[in-house]
View (tube, rainbow, N blue to C red):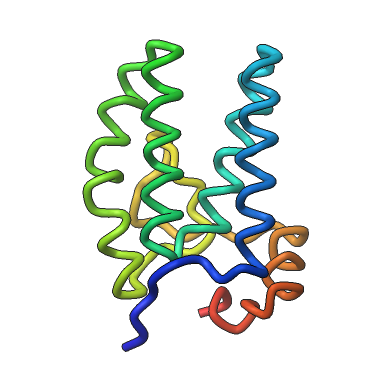
Length: 128
């Protein structure tokens, strides 16, 4: 069993960029686009406990800001357990992380995100 810790620097730059795009789009009132970037950050960082938990924290914060009780209550268990599952390498790959999807279901990873994993040297880990 591989134990995961912090996101590797080659991958972190893409994770941080998605979070920046989220903040910019949210600030401009583009909530759907902002959420999309938050989901992408989640997918990129979900194997790493801190990045994974932070993405869920931002999703919880988003739910609070838009007063979406489904998202708020859906993010609380994800925030509690997501980082633990990342630590032991048991995450459903490609899962976008929102309360509108099962927290246990894997999803196909978009081709552009697969390319990000490839460029960062993470492609083998994210195809399991």
